[in-house]
Amino acid sequence: MARQLTCPQCRKDTVLRACPQSPREHVASWIWISPFDCLECHYRFLACRIGLVESKHAIERREHLRIPVRLFLSFSGGKVRGEGIVMDLSMGGCIIKSDAQVHADDIFYLEIAISDQDAPIEVAAMVRSISSRGIAFKFLRKAQDNKQLLAFIQSNAGATSTVLSKAVASPVAH
Ligand SMILES: [Zn+2]
Image 1 (cartoon, rainbow, N blue to C red):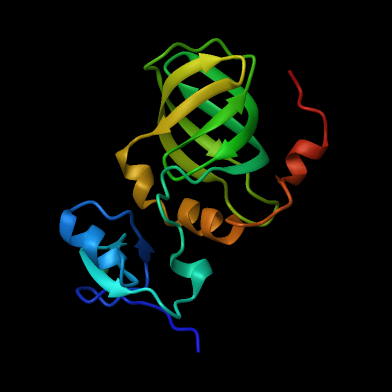
Image 2 (image 1 turned 30 degrees about the vertical axis):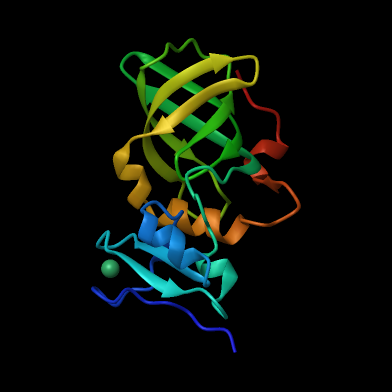
């Protein structure tokens, strides 16, 4: 019987499995007990992971879990405005393809179109690097608490097909 964890402190179900960090947590992980983080109140606790609803909690190392996507985005910051395609998305940041001239450490406000029905995901992000792969953004601290982003990542984690927003299906105007 699958079960779902709730936070012992705030009782919300916004709980994600985390990587063991302390020696105590490493030892616990040998007996199927994992640390969990509550996104609501940031409470960290240990719980048995046997029988949990995987899709709900299994985002281990969620900052490193990258989901391949093709989502249209627009961004702005200072005098620069740009548009592009998000190629890969995680709770920690994203990689985009764009012709916009940006520089490392620039801060932008991103709007990522996830579907026709839903409002875009809005996050503040800093340019971490620019390479042939694209522009790598690191989301600023508050994005980690972005419930819409979390819900999107959770619902697409483990999906084999690439997420494609309708906005991308039509040619991007320059
Ligand atoms: Zn909590």
